[in-house]
Amino acid sequence: MPIVLKSSPLLWTRLAALAFTCVAFSVGLHGARLYLRTGDFCIFCWAFSFAGTLLVILVELFGLQTRAPVSWKNFPITFACYAALLCLSASIIFPIYFLRGSGDQSEIRDFRIVCTVFSCLATITYMSEVSLTKARPGEVVGYMATAPGLLKVLETFVACVIFVFISEPVLYDRHHSVKYCMSVYCICFILTAVIILLCIGECTGFLPFPFARFLSAYSLLAVVLYLSATIIWPIFNFDPHNGGQKQRPYNCSTAVGLCTWDKCMAVAVLTGVNFILYLADLIYSTRLVFVSA
Image 1 (spheres, rainbow, N blue to C red):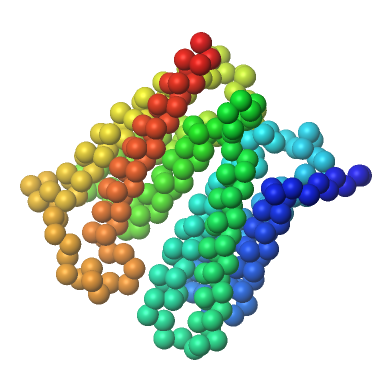
Image 2 (image 1 turned 120 degrees about the vertical axis):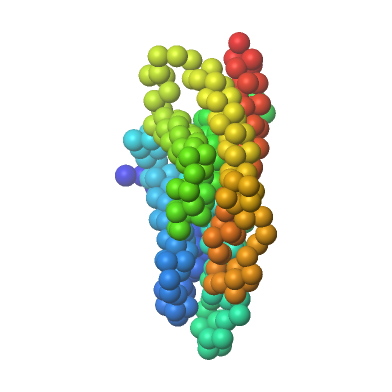
């Protein structure tokens, strides 16, 4: 089997990401003494990114793109975007839990600093890869390399973060309106994930309706749903007349990590962020329909 080795900025970017993530999770496992599920999550972020990048490099090295069971126009940039978001999350979470106020031995602290530095470098590298492979004016690329495709990756990732905050402790079982917000997050996440999978699997041509019009209609529905959740969630979590708590409790200052009130606030902010992302997605998808027409 011939090996295709073409030196390019994209190849060197991927090799750098491979090295940075390898160092991050290797050092984390070797001497950083990570504990809690937070440490496991950070290790997963770096190891997942390393494994995926290695797979992409090997497929392109051996010229197996046409034999891959996925669309190679869509898969690498989708993975790079998720890897950038995962490494960014680890770069934020890791120092908060393992460096802030750390009284551990200096050697352990040094290992943790190395993990943080290389996680940040990996984040920058994956962002560079996305920048190198995203759609340019006049280029024929896969849907996931366009602005709406990248927005959908962001939308699903933000929804996953919402699920983390909203599920431990359970924050959506106090009122039917809050349960409605949870259903909004689930419905939009599932449909957006299905769209991404359809694009990666090149199955959009099997739909019984035009894909571009479906994207536009779905984006409009998601905007309406998230707008309602953006309004409802704060009302039933922070308004005292509806059983909420307006002021941040005093015990939140002494809590390890985020208290319940902080998580409710984080969900409110992330709901607004996803509303803006879906609104931008709607604008781009509507333009796509008109351009196609």
